[in-house]
Image 1 (cartoon, rainbow, N blue to C red):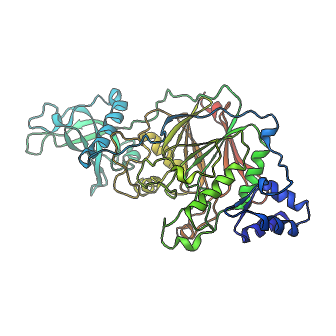
Image 2 (image 1 turned 135 degrees about the vertical axis):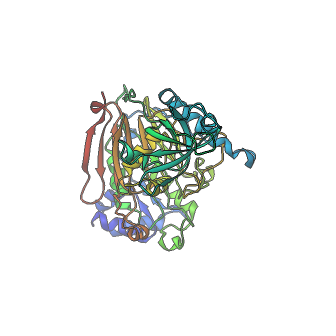
Image 3 (image 1 turned 120 degrees about the horizontal axis):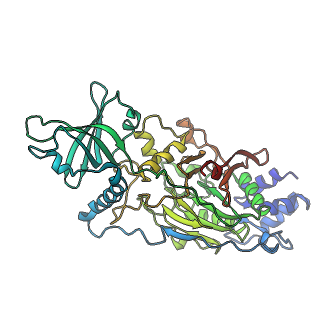
Length: 489
């Protein structure tokens, strides 16, 4: 009996099956064995592992003298760390913290003057070269094609004109609402009111990744695997591919970490008529299936799981870690973190963020698209912010500090959400968008988006070399490799 037929029979019964069980059945006679296993299963089982097959001993890596991997250190995004402000009146605190933090990154380069001093009557700065730092209020394009942006600091607001004929205008066109920028240029004379009317910008500044940043590989051997958007419960989830992935992990003891950047389940009620596209109909059963799938992986792995917009947590970001009520079937080697979170694995700092803000950034940044999530990761790093735009598709939680600010430069930025694998490097930061384990959805067909399902990005932590492995039929193959450390030393 073919392995594909075995998997299909279990799916008909509403079950997922571990690859070791599939191999055992194909070598043991086929359909009769399947029916015996299914009929003997206790209620509540959604993933058939070696534990459910009497007399079967699984070849597990943890029995082959493979040591348990070091537990990851949570640097930011620990459970319970994102607490909303007590009063709605304090909602401004998030934006003030954002401004203060990002302005500090630019101040030595910009030498800003408070906007209040630039716009007051008879300003002594009129018709002189000055610097300013502000949060973007709004932007527009003039009749002649120049970019006009209004910025705000704690003291006031002022408009900035970016001339379309000046070098760097393409970056001015990519200025988005609520990001913090710096400018240097000439303050125009007043328009009759006695104060400076507008800054004619010569140079645009962003918080940026410092040019002095260098990658810091681990001094210990070991690899990490980056995935996202598993979407267990959806009828387009790819169990065959997942089983091949699980089998590969069983045979690859050098992999010490598995990082999952959200949307581990398809969820319930996320979009209209979703119930018609679900293979597992309840949220608890979806998470139980995930827990059993992860339990079937090698126990020496350290698994780090952050949520996404399909998970059973609040929509507003930062999102809390997955609640304990959904973790009953998860193994003890899973570390639950918030979205976003910064974790340290063998001295390599990884910033995990599901990536819902990619929807908003694509809308506001000319030339960007879902097919190129790497470009959006670069945009996040330039702005040192994961999702600055307020009032669009990404709801932001009112917190005393803006936890979506990229305060410390990571070695790896790990995102997902768009279901397309992409890897970029930007100023010594490896950006990974980790694709999906779900086939093309009806929504993606309407949007003409072609996902890259069943791909895993593997990073050697000692060299920072990466490769993309494919687990669709035909068998696993490498899609690309890059020695990242060599390119940045």
